[in-house]
Length: 144
Length: 73
Image (cartoon, rainbow over all chains, first blue to last red; front, side, top):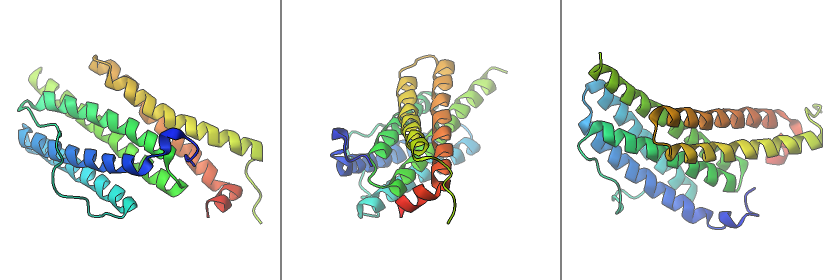
């Protein structure tokens, strides 16, 4: 499964980069949580932070390096102070993650690993929908 | 011994379909990322969710087949 494709030759490295991305996302979202205009939105964002860290742990387990490093890697996005703008960036990040996990799952060495990775893909899709709902909630509250 | 659910040719087609749905899921998300209009972006990435749903349905179908289960052990 996946081993006959040249793009799959560096699967392990791609998994390591994916862990870094998840840790970046967790940090970025934690900053967005601090910008949330209501407690409910803050709780929702915080739950997504937990999911992203869980994704990092799961992939770290696959690589045998669990728990993942706690240091924040360089070049992570930072919150701008605008909740709506940062949520839009978060949606773009979730969409990138869906594409990344689809590619990783295509390269997975076993069916079990493939389904673990696609379960993360499903989480990222759910996150995109939650972020979108947050945006819509913000728009509807500002335009009665 | 349980009867196979699918002919081997059909099983291969299902596997191809599952691979295609996974690829499409990633492709729709990639397209959506570059769509500026929020409504259209949401519409397109919902297709990524649909493709993922199809992938899951095919996973269940494939795992339900005794031939396939055996090959996964």
